[in-house]
Structure formats: C-alpha cells, structure tokens
Amino acid sequence: MAVFRVEKNRNYTVMSNIHLRDQNLSLKAKGLLSLLLSLPDDWHYSIRGLAKISKESPDGISSGLKELEAAGYLTRRQLRGERGRMGETEYTIYEEPRAPCQDSPCTENPVTVKPDTASPCTESPVQINTEKTNTDRSNTNKNKYPFHSYQEAAQETADEMGKEREAYRDLIRENISYDALITDGLRKEDIDEIVEILVDTVCSTKPFLVVGGDKKPAQVVKSQLLKLDCEHIRFVLACMKENTTKIRNIRQYLLTTLYNAPVTISNYYGALVNHDLYGGN
Image 1 (tube, helix red, strand yellow):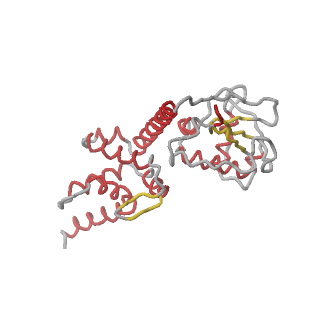
Image 2: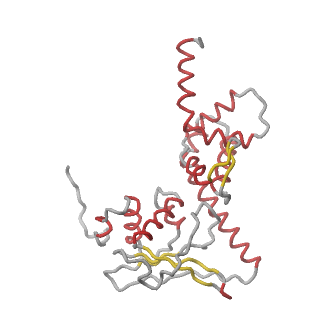
Image 3: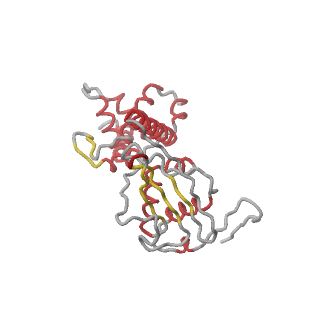
C-alpha cells in the first residue's frame, strides 16, 4: 500500500499515539479524541458544535464522549451556578487514560447525562477542557449562565430547544437530499411536512414512542429515522399516492411508514418489478 504524506510545516497537530494504539477504543472514539486534541484552546466546545464539523450526529458525539470517559480519557463534573443551582457540565480531556476519579474533575458519583437528543440540552452548552499532558496549558474558558428567575431559565431552555431542532432539521435535510427532492418535482409542502415529523420525533424527550400502535424505545425509533435517505422519502410518498383507504391519523401513518421504510422498500419495488414482468398474474 502506498502512503502519500504532506509536508508538515503547517496544518498539522502533534499528539500522543497512545489513544490511536488503544485496542479498547472504537475508531469513532479515537477519531473524536484526535479531533478534540487538534482544536485550538479558545475553540468553543459543545456537542452540537462538534457535530457541525463532522458527520456524526449529536447522539454519536455524546456516545463517543461516554466511551472516552469509560476508558479514562475524559472526566466530567457538574458545576454549580448561582444559589447552588445545577450549572453546566465541565469536561476535561486527556491524551493518556487515567484511572477513574484520579483527579479532581471526577466526582465520587459520576454525573449521568442524557443523550443530546433525549432532552433539550440541560447542560447549556457543554464545555470541554482540553488538557494536553505534554503541555502545561489547560483550557479553563467557561460560559456561565446565572438564572435569576424562572422566566430566564425557561427562555434559556427554549433557546436551546430551538437550536437543537434547527441542527436536526439541517441534518435530516442533508440526509434525504432535500434540494434534490424538490428539484425532482416533488411537492415542497409534502417534503416539509415529512421533515417536521422527523424533527419532532428525534427531538422528543419521551422514553418511548408509539409507532404503528406499538410502544418502542425512543432511541431505537430515532436511530431508524436518522438513517432515511432520499429513496426512502420517494417510497413513502409513493405509498401515500397509491393508498386508497381513508387515513384517520395522517401524522401517525406517515411516522409508521417512515419507520418501516428501510425494511419494506425492497419488497415494495420487488413487487412492482414482478407486476411489470408478469402482468400482475
């Protein structure tokens, strides 16, 4: 195998190979840690920010951080805001793994943080300190949000929910090739309706969601919906067009069809091919 390297006089990062050689880490965790160590100290770290500069979803970034924490490359502690209220969560990243609770950022009882899609980001926003073990520098830049009243707290939460919805709306539109679908002549109103159903579902805070009359774990449903692409959307719209029965709950019908699309699309088009070949006999 040929390897082509670049001249290392600019745009490169010096970091330890320890995590790259760690067989207990997944490739995603190795890549995430490498990304964290490559960013400048004054970069504003957040789960959504990291998702924006990579192909990972906020859920993927969150699970990667949890894996790094379990392996000792990350510690976290819950900060307290004004009057003892729960504040932001501070993360500290290490180039070399450390034993649990070896340093001060780790607490006796690790803070449990819900996935970024499970709740409207109560750690507003997540801050990460990138402490590199081969330097004396540590990033102590923190944003503080003192809540002086319930109204201000509610406004902060609403703002974060809006940002989360917008991030997922952009991600879903990219996944389904939104502009290409519109260009192909499909009705923009239909596409927008599907996008909003998907956004509402992946941003839901419920632990279980009803799909096709059955309660399913929310994370399973969200993972399935985030895998949809433009062909799945065309398939769902085709099913809608061919359906001749009265649909009482169009929203639930669409959600069920979208959820089942990755499984049923092959059989659907296979049946169409057989119909064309054998004339429906």
